[in-house]
Image (cartoon, rainbow, N blue to C red):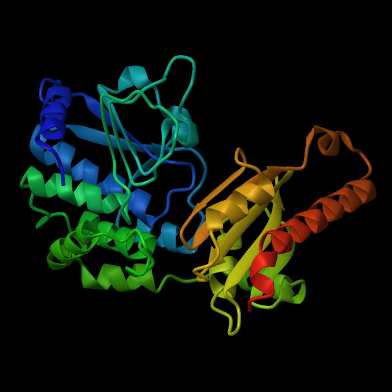
Amino acid sequence: FMSSVDKEKMNEIFSGLDRDSVVGILMHPSPDPDCLGSAAGMSVLIKEIYGLNSKIFHFGEVSHPQNKSLKNVLHIMLEDGNDFDPKNCAATILVDTDLQSSGFKSETFTKVDVRLDHHAMDRNNGSNLTDVRPIGATCSIIWDYLREFEVSLEEYSDAATAMVIGIKTDTLDFTSSNTSKLDMEAFRGLLPFVDKISLAKVTKYPLPKMVFEIEAKAYKNKEIINTTLVSFVGDVTAHNRDIIPTIADRFSRMDGISTAVILGVIDNHVIASVRSDDARVDVNDLCVNTFGKSHAGGKEGSGGARFPLGAAYELLGDKEIKEKVKEEVVSQLKLRIFEELGEHKEEL
């Protein structure tokens, strides 16, 4: 639970700020429900306790159908990360990520005031207040802060609904091994303030036609060994990047499949999304060992990678040669994936 020391630090950071000042809330480039819900919850706390306005910044694009629905239905206003200027923010809060992964770190911006996260990353962010807990969702930490500061969400159903969805998705419906007592308490504590109609709209989010077109290609190109499925969907536009994890989610639920890996190419990088409900598969190890620590990572049940095709590939002018190089790289990555899971194949 939130310590008295952290509560004092919050007051030290925000109590003396001018009421006309703005607090910058920073997220990672592809904010998921837990990240979006955490940012929305912190906006409420900053407003209710300190009377301060906030702006939520991130690089990248919210393109996953569910994340897009959550942002739109629950009226979460986001600012382009390129418009972030630390000089225009009286204080900064980082949620659900570390500074380097957020994309905001630069020579002139090397620390935030507050970092709240549930990912135990090694990088030092140098924040005045760092609260990183190995639990299911960052939204649960935000709820703990709201509770300790006695903030009511009676008039903030959008934020409460976003946080409920964030906890539900990041704990895999409370089935992940890092689901904690706090996650369950936060979920129960938020439920009375949830807008049920909005919740239904977000959880039953519409899928664009492009999902099914790319999914058909993924199904056609699939390779299955025992309970592992790997497929390559070819080139995907940056706008449609979140279709890759969407397909990975769907294919992991295919009868007889426990691990699904979907690969695609975006901007000269192989993008991978991994989903697994096999208790013997360490998704983080699978991602790191296949794509390299600097290009990949994961948590229980899900992971991803952004693997560069290389400077030489970018210099190639002949499209046919580029296509062959790309196919060979993807082919080798597929082999690595199956090899990494090889110890499981004989047991299945």
